[in-house]
Length: 351
Image (cartoon, rainbow, N blue to C red; front, side, top):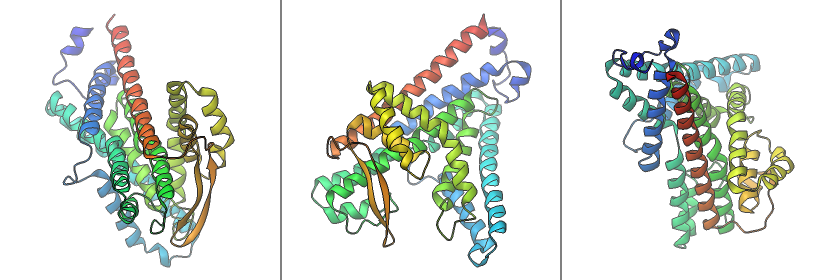
């Protein structure tokens, strides 16, 4: 059977599953996933390159502009349009990722792996999250509070112009711990799942990235996106639910504090309006012994968030870097598990 797999002309058609040869798809997608992880870890997203999120944002803004929804006072119509936008962008992104990677594999297996790895790498934000935190923390360490506020405003939605040093550190910690799930672990989860399907890693990773972009763009319960953004907010919550819980489990096991992690998540994480953010922040807060949450200001309006975790230690730059390190441990743990699963499947398949 190994010889038969090796004989396939140029390696990969995503229809190989129909012939019982899905293992080749998994091998190639997993290799592409490993390359993508290395690319994201070492390089991240080059600023000069066109990023899929930019294209997704342009599509969303263009659709919203054409719809003129701010002048439309019909909630049902906005619900329908928002659902249409969400489904179209998510499915369209997945199809695009599948078509690009499959077409590249038809040209040559190596070209396919390179293409799929670049697409998947663009969906991962491990490097970007590290750089964002570094940008703020390094300026703050230099004592430039005003510049730290300005840098922070590029990454958070809250008002930053009057934040104290402690509030800036809390904002960075909350950004790092919340985005660890939807920016790093959830895209990795769907890339891994995709590697074991005929769709491949690029399709599912890009589809999830579209859902995440929709949520961050229009997925708000406040006006003017209350109705048109309802679907985008809900679908992202549902898609992130499982990878978020798996991230919590991984953090609990890696930290050797499973009881503490689950205690904090069940006590405090459930208080958050988001079904995932509170759990993600709660897991990190439990492991690091810090407390996040409190009152934030958005466009001059105070918005209280529940306190999550116990303030055993103050939030410091060192604690934030520890949170980033925990995310790296989770990331590579999942990657190693994916590789191990492919090896096990391959051995079973070849016997």
